View 1 (cartoon, helix red, strand yellow):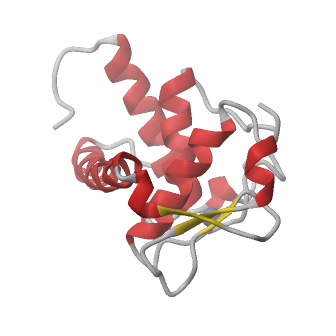
View 2 (view 1 turned 180 degrees about the vertical axis):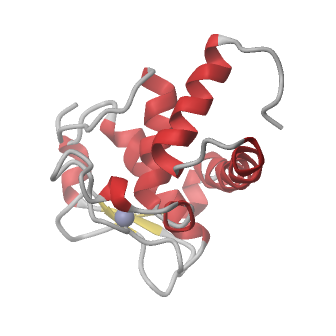
View 3 (view 1 turned 120 degrees about the vertical axis):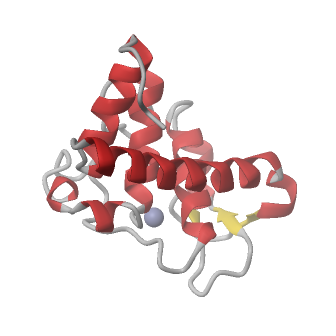
Length: 152
Ligand SMILES: [Zn+2]
């Protein structure tokens, strides 16, 4: 439930839900906020059991979560050069992939075009987009939408 007196945190949460999940009407906000919260609980569960969840990968790139899912995310060789804000963002993104095969990258990495394709996704698409989860959490964390470079 999002209802209540306006506070800076509530205002930020509503702005981030509108920006990343394309909802501005109260019933839609409540429904989508509940879905995002449930997904975040599953993401958190993976982060808290990282030893069981993560495996060392051998490829390039930051990380991979295979389709079909095998219960693991593979940390690849380039993860070590990712910046301190990007690393947890990658883990949130991959944890959301790990929840279900249907959770994919819709519209590609928003960093590439500063979100142009990403922001054309509708609510239903964003609820299954791994970039929406990581961009939403990053937005809440830093207070605005950001597109992180590899070393940030
Ligand atoms: Zn992805």
